[in-house]
Image (cartoon, rainbow, N blue to C red; front, side):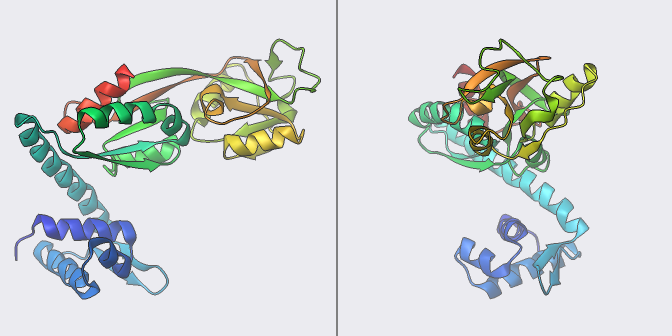
Length: 287
């Protein structure tokens, strides 16, 4: 039996769910049909794509992981074929898969998506959110076609969208409220640091100035950092772009040494993207 796109679609869904029951629900077919399709694909390829695990359900084999990347690439090519045909008839359609971190989703995507939908109402947009390092992995393994991430952009084609800088945040009655700039070296023991995939930009600057930031508290989100600073547990250290995506009543101070990064859109190849994704990136850059 020859492999077909339906086999690959079932396989990709199963690889995402890692559960045959959930796969069947997602595809609106029976579980035996899922098992049969996967078995047919394995017989066509003459390899095992999954192994069963009593606790985890099913697990991708090493060759299954390789096939998954190629299957996603085939799905992307199929999508591009239909989009090229649709573009010829002046009716762009298909799906765009985007990876983004929460602040970029809040500040950059709403206007771009609104403008894009107004022009291309038949294109579906699928948004996956994570931290920058995770999104870069998604672009690499083709889980998404384009990603909005923080620098560095090494290994990807990229377009810079925003120049960003790190700031310190304090309560309005803090002893540093009249200070023009917060010295990281002097207050390195009092910092509450917000992680989120931008550690590379921060660490390179700290190493350049031979600073070892000994943060008293590390958190995952800007919302948590704001609450910790309000409770006077330390001085918040966060990128301004991330901070501007949440509401707060804290005093914002520049820091020294200055720590900067870029927010940009990345892809494996902008030229090889689907027509819809090319149009979206162009609109995102204009926005």
